[in-house]
Figure (cartoon, rainbow, N blue to C red):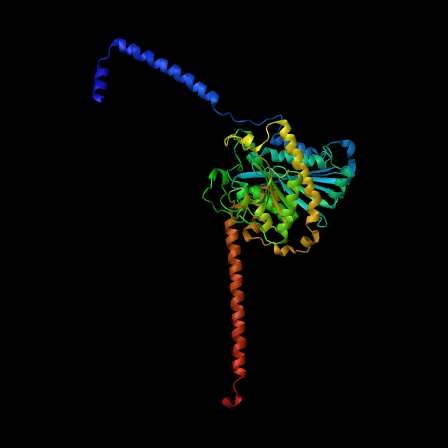
Amino acid sequence: MKVQYHQAMSHPHPFLLLSSFLSIIASFRSFSFVYADANLTQPSFTPINRDLYHSSNDLIEQIKSLVHQHPDKLTVGGLQLLFGNNYCCGHLVLPYSYHKQVETIKAGNRGYEAEITVVTYCQNWKGSDDKSKFRILLSFGQHGRELITSELAWRILSILSEEQFLPKMDRGSLNGTLDNLIIKVVPMENLNGRKLVEAGDLCERRNGRGVDLNRNWSVDWGKKEKDYDPYEENPGTAAFSEPETQIMRNLALSFDPHIWINVHSGMEALFMPYDHKNTTPDGLPSHQMRSLLEELNEVHCHKRCMIGSGGGSVGYLAHGTATDYMYDVAKVPMAFTFEIYGDDTASTKDCFKMFNPVDHTTLKKVLNDWSAAIFTIFKEGPHQLDVHSKAGVPNLEKWVSIDEYLDGYLMGRRNRYGKKMEVLEVGMQEIRTYFRLFLLSSVLLLFMFCSRISKTKGGRQIVSSIPLSQYT
């Protein structure tokens, strides 16, 4: 057949050439129409609705403006703004004598920089280190594509600021509840990842250099399951390799919360530890957490939400998560992961629709329902957990590794002095090595000293037991 093909083409007839040319053109035109029709039937991906969602910059600015808007409600003497190289904070005297503090914490390593805004709410302000109050730490926007979570943070802060109100909410009763609380809110933990989403990468959940911040914590870090997806679950080069997780770890250890809630989207669920195994903790803490979650599911989730451990309920194990660290290492008595929305009808590639409401009615309902759930946590959390049981636990029970201590120390120094401290990162491994050698040598010297003392005492006993008459 090949020979015949070449013979036919060696002396082509002009009419055959013209016919072939016309056939090719016709085929190309029909292919173009079919391809165009196929394109019309391909699924379209939902873009970010800018009318429903704030941009990251706008959201942060709106949140910061909560500390100095409505001047008719502020006293001039109570307004103080402090600005530094790496943070800003504001202290206000607002209605009902409540105060809010805004901090922007920056950190970086190996040429990568990150910043996290933290808002602190407290009535009858004595300082965010007031250990007499019940302390709650909320984190939103850990994954860039989950825009709805940061909108919920904005909604909660607006309610706390009395700019918005929950339906059927008794403000007087709420003020009595809030009087005993200090609430720290991280509205957008993963700012760099969020900016990638806003630039068009709608499925991005990792941070600005491709690390999943909810796999970068130290509990069971780095373990990979059979269904491990490096695009989705890259744990980083080491536990706490990322500035964002370093900031969050130090915030949690210094604030020492009674309740931690990590807010996500993708489904409707109320999770408690553990994520890295399909079991829940034993004893009273597990009972307290489950009891609170069951109430939330009954009242606010209308029994739609999945309840249990993340590892035992979601269908896969997750290693190196924030909630497992908060419970196991930071010793937070109640540590939760909330999944507040998910569209299971959306294509797996239509990430904005899968993780975020795309119409105003659904968005409003999600924000109302979950704001009410969070405020139920504010009310019922202290009743479920005896504050004195945590106050009586000494800080020495919170063991922190040498690496974590040095990372926290250097990050704090860098936040204070800026780029002057960047040179310390170059010697991080050397500092750790020398510190370990120092500890090892100290232990060896102590062992040798104790051994020498023991031998000396033993020798004296033997000498004293020999009769003197033998030497005369």
